[in-house]
Length: 162
Ligand SMILES: NC(=O)c1ccc[n+]([C@@H]2O[C@H](COP(=O)([O-])OP(=O)(O)OC[C@H]3O[C@@H](n4cnc5c(N)ncnc54)[C@H](OP(=O)(O)O)[C@@H]3O)[C@@H](O)[C@H]2O)c1
Image (cartoon, rainbow, N blue to C red; front, side, top):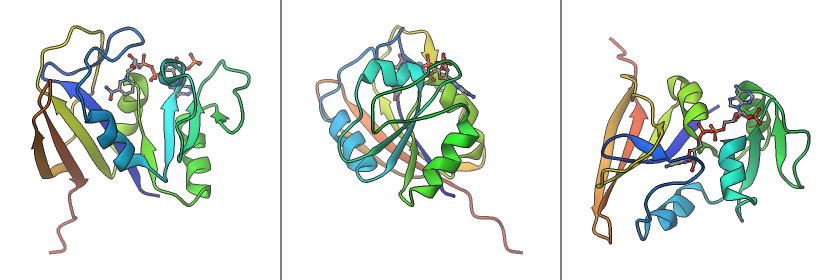
């Protein structure tokens, strides 16, 4: 199973404020769409509530301990590991797309990370976890927009074969 995280964070590490993302950087959502199209999105219940609908062209799996049911075709799972097992059965790329609680649980097992660094200081109360040492920056690209941002791609470091 290959697991990618996809996130955007401000320079002070914020990813959310309450149930909202506290910036609007033109083009960033298009980037999210390009990265995730055709895949399976695994997300926490609060992130699903803030999006409010399944995103077209992608499967949606929502993790919740309390939700009883969600509209078709969304799949509801009671834990991250069950969600990832269900995602693997779909034979499509797996993207863990937040929010803070779910990133914190998934980052230690991530094989790659698509991280958009938004060049602003944002007020918020939900933060991205520290990037672990096993994920190494592989490429980056700077975008000019109403708020500038840099897309960064991290991959699991190859094991030393010696
Ligand atoms: N900037 C970004 O890239 C980005 C991306 C996504 C989201 N966000 C933002 O992040 C914020 C939401 O993040 P959050 O940390 O508050 O919530 P979240 O991670 O989206 O969802 C938390 C909920 O997921 C469920 N959950 C979490 N871990 C679970 C587990 N191990 N087993 C079963 N269920 C589990 C629980 O649902 P129940 O309470 O139903 O049991 C929990 O309340 C929002 O502001 C959103 O806009 C930002």
